[in-house]
Length: 377
Image (cartoon, rainbow, N blue to C red; front, side, top):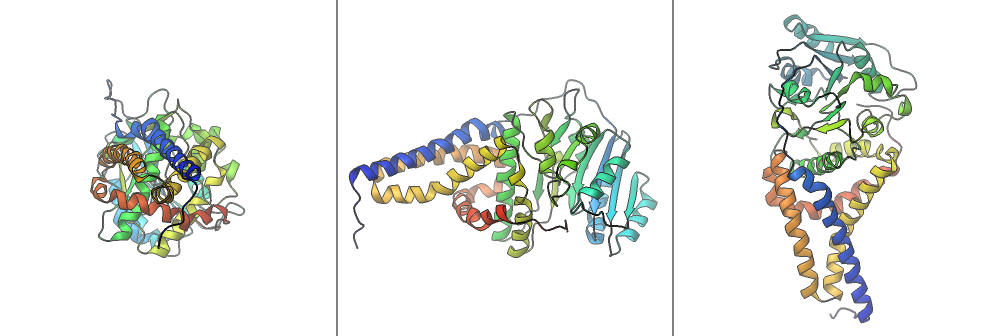
């Protein structure tokens, strides 16, 4: 069956719209994302170590604490440091696991919370208690289900601090496991890091991830903690960084020694619930962050439908070269960025995963309008 023919000017308009979308994408790849792809850590002329307080909040995480906490406790870091675990109203064996670990590791400090904070849902109250109890200015945050990728995690993250730096954004990766779901989760994690790290390098930091995040205690005190959004269950990482980060006080860390690892969601429902919880906070970002994220998301959502429409209703000999230009530049930027973040194995699937993002946005876009759940577990 022949396709209906559109007037020639309409075909041209569709092609122009497609070209505009490609131009927007190329702008992001070349102006923003290439910053991460070609980023090189500047070697430190003078190496300095700082006292560090590692803070981990846990609720019913006995299994993860047994498996992952030794990774934070066995760090090779010669300078004074402490590892604070805030055990938030756990009903499992977390208390006893921590008591046993404390016998072996003197740097482990345990805070037992036995009452829920009224009117402060989520993780913010236990995290605030941990921060206020910290002895040292530099804070290093991670989750109970995360483990440092190497024994030099503390060393690498604190090395980024100088007299101007107050925030260091790290990469929280997921373990590489067989199966399609693992690749989709890791790709989405990579895309998130590609954006928040690239924008930070461009002087427009807008978020960090609590799986691997560091900032100075003075920043927390100056901002009055999470008081600006304490009524929102999420946002202890991204909303806080969105409020306090700027081009002068924020750095990223792409050193593999600085990464953390965690196990991804075991099934589609669990992953969907995780992402829905995370996306409920993005509506509270500053306008600049929402605009940058929104424009790129819109262009990524429209690129393949408009490619198909332009191929059907305009001259494919003009459409394909435009798309191939975008594909080549995108491929180079993604390849180098994936390699930098230790996700190089995903590159061979990148075209499939790029198409998948269209469906990803369809699935998760409604989360932007949902009311967040009051619990953080």
